[in-house]
Image (cartoon, rainbow, N blue to C red; front, side, top):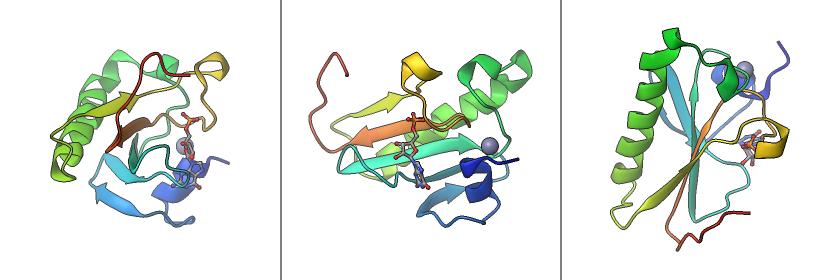
Length: 112
Ligand code: 5GP
Ligand code: ZN
């Protein structure tokens, strides 16, 4: 499958990894939008949030708790932002779901 993030999971494209286990991988974003900006992805290919199924409930929770734990390990006690973009109007550009975690600057609302 021609998927950028599956290639990162497979080690075919390098990434600055923060954490990896059997089910998820976390790595720094190549074009950070904040001083700290990393992505948490499932190792399993899921194209968009709309493709999550009830069987993925534990995986989705694991992604969320991995984001929480890593943010706190990276010293984000002042706060952080989590974003998941879905499809074109949601701003998604890589069609393998990923949770953005951004921190270490003041976030504003609404996002662009
Ligand atoms: P999306 O726009 O789909 O929500 O987010 C995709 C993210 O993946 C973007 O923030 C983009 O900078 C990041 N990205 C795209 N290609 C690469 C890559 O090859 N390596 C890494 N580490 N991040 C990437
Ligand atoms: Zn993929």
